[in-house]
Image (cartoon, rainbow, N blue to C red; front, side):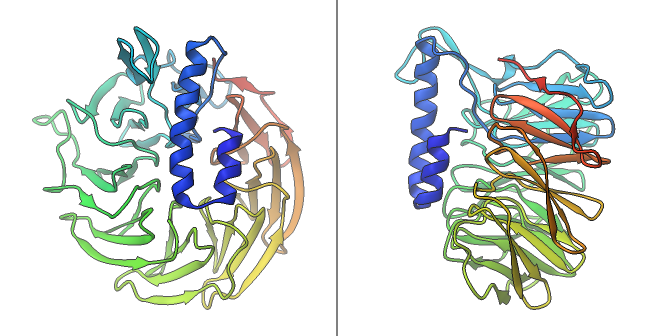
Length: 393
């Protein structure tokens, strides 16, 4: 993810962000044509499945690593993620351009699901040998996919850049390629960058049209929508029938999951946008913000305290290790917050930008830096165990 994109994202409206990301993709393609070296794209994180790590790298490859010894689980997969072109305004002659991978891979039912941005498709690979099992749609493409695929109760869900939400049924012996679970995709009013989540029979997803949607999982119809003053791109957290989420309008919300009724709204706006996913710990929500602060909300009434963590933005979603919240700022510094007393500690400084969400396995936190390296941080010792591992050019 380009630094120019980040600066504009902090400063301007969501429409400017959408224009600029297109310009960045164009400039990256032109740089490749002119021999300018590798241009990394995306902000995908790491999917953890037992001792296996699955990564959609910043150079558009699906990579599997053994978490114990760093060995590759299979040959890196990239052929499926390229578009062969005979030459156009956006490509080199007879070149294969990558289908950039922004969403973190998803693992479910012994399958790895990867969604592509430049040429909207979802690919499925078995976790044992990483052999492609199917792609959706089988023919043609969808609009660009920025968020990740969400696996829930045997089905897969995701949103696209044309504002639609898709649902796929489970694969069967008679149906090796999954069929759509709904008669038509669910339509919102604008682009979707969020990864959905679900509770019970309801799917929740935010849109650039400023609404949080509750969708009936059984048939894809709307239960309700709740309008805010800005785009919603983070995944909400849900507890005891209440949906909690932040918006680009700089406010944080608690909404009844059944009715869509507002229960509370943060009293004062944050300085900037809620981009990263919030984390629920007991009866407290920790919500990172682009302003470098962590906003802490009491879920009962929205009472707010803040931790002024960093002078850099926080767009990477944090993870919880025991009672420690691990947060990466965009400047590459990784912090620990002791949630029992909200004390902060700097664990490590990678001195490279971090935009991708963090992932955790036991007490090891995985971070991907903008130079396309993966780091394994022991949160007890503060040591970077791997030193790091390159994900390729």
